[in-house]
Length: 198
Image (cartoon, rainbow, N blue to C red; front, side, top):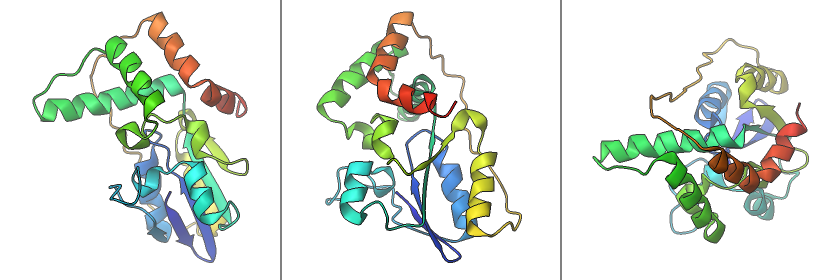
């Protein structure tokens, strides 16, 4: 849940895992100061600060502490496939194997029902990260609209690098129709959230 001080504006970024958040944070840093960002949960939180869901950050700050709030969301199947690629790369770096996606996905989603904070909140539905007044962007539209919006609300159109750090890999994410249905059912609230943006 990074907070950015951009000129005289306080901007809250609901960093939903696997939605381009690292690139957005880099851009925010180029425009101002960033706080409440740390990649470890520590003893006082169940997840790292940048991955707190709305229930937690609104309990801490309310929903009107900042001038603007925004998030980037994406198709939930693509998001889970991205998470799988990320986990596969990490496993390979430790010379470990990971189950095929059709086995891995149902397994981790079952575990996430018991522990929503599993994998640093990476599996939590996107709808649980945002509030009603959060400005939403679709990752499928690219990050340029996000960067343009940041420039507009900050009043700072100074040209800065606009890097989108895509971690594309050649990991096979073969998926059965049954697995896709399971994912879409698990993330039904995300499907509705996305439908509202189309």
